[in-house]
Length: 234
Image 1: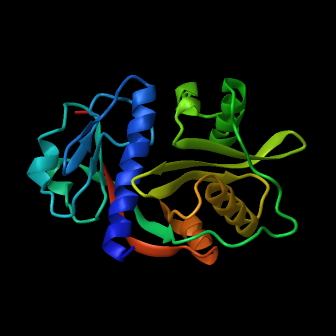
Image 2 (image 1 turned 60 degrees about the vertical axis):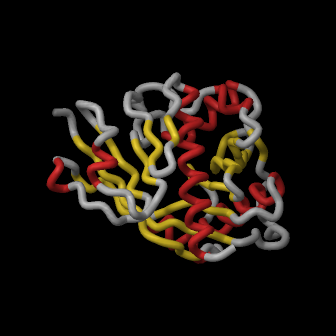
């Protein structure tokens, strides 16, 4: 798959995952050919709009905006929303690996899917550190055949985790975290677990900072930039 198609798959996969999370909270999004929108949710860390085409314009995006806080995932890093009252919240890079590495390091601990609401709640507590004002990931996601909430446990405690979501010809990796594993073991384990669930699909996602460097050292390559814009309460 060429670079342009990989980027398109990564963007579409991420929009499908964001839609699944918003839907589980009662706010399913609307997919157009150029934009995904779920304007009324109040979920932290999830955008209200995601651009799906690189040539989308600022007026097209703002036509979907509702009063109050509104965030936009500028999937291709091409928009400037500064003059419209938005601030730049984050810059990151889309990443891809065409196939997972063969085998696991000898000292790599096993990864398993969370399958019950209690396991999901324990996973989220480990991911968030107990912060936040309510769960982001609801049990409805466990019934989605495209979704797997992965946990690596040590002595019964979640030591690392990630979420993988398969759609649009790719397996998206997100919410990667660890309290105990080194970055190489973390990323090796996540990749292998994702590939075991959905073989022969490219692995995609986005990262920034130290997490981006860890993913690159684990064999991912950078596809393209993205930006996340936010407008505060008016």
